[in-house]
Length: 306
Image (cartoon, rainbow, N blue to C red; front, side, top):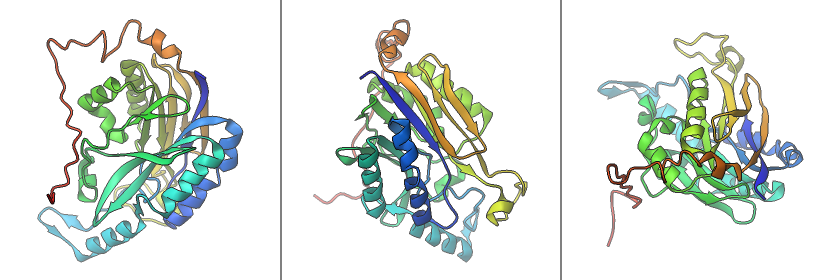
């Protein structure tokens, strides 16, 4: 059916760690079922955490022992893919009947990736996307993904693709995903800025697709018992801003600010044909005689044994 309900689940990682955060996710099962959502998008780095304000003991040219300890704790709180947490999320997808797109910190050996996982009600974990370019000091703790994890997944509500946080500012990545025929653009994030709302509306209008962006919400450092250098103690660490946007850039729901909850909207993928009538960025509005994008989707493991 072209009409369906899509949702963004706006919650945050819990200080107690991944087990408590997973329980928090699972506690929304009744709300997801009641909403009738065919798709639920969850925020960036939800399982594993986004350590906003953490320095990991790093100065230019040297690392301090306390930073190594901080990274070891962060590594321990990441998840294996597949693993116990992905099994629990697959079961949630099956019980609720919804596709899930979930932001996690993926542990692969001694490296960590900021990853979006795709779950299908029938097939469980079906795909993952590793963030191609961690932003700023995220590069201290997260490895870079490669072109082998740029999936488009057939979901109940339509064809699903994902770009994580500031990947949405990478025009060539957007072009590649548009060319794959994304119907519903999933954008897990921790970006709470007003500018993010403009970005999501731009992506929807440029790609002529529906956009579901799910942002974490985190309480103030005072409420969390933290000291974050340079951050006002009473100001929320992350104030949310989840939003759902239509293919002409119109806001369908949100932004949801400063609270936890399930943001829902009804979409109709039949509207995509009408929206692309005058602008199909990877189709009739492209100029392949002038511009060409080549995407290397080969895995790049660094070491190959043949």
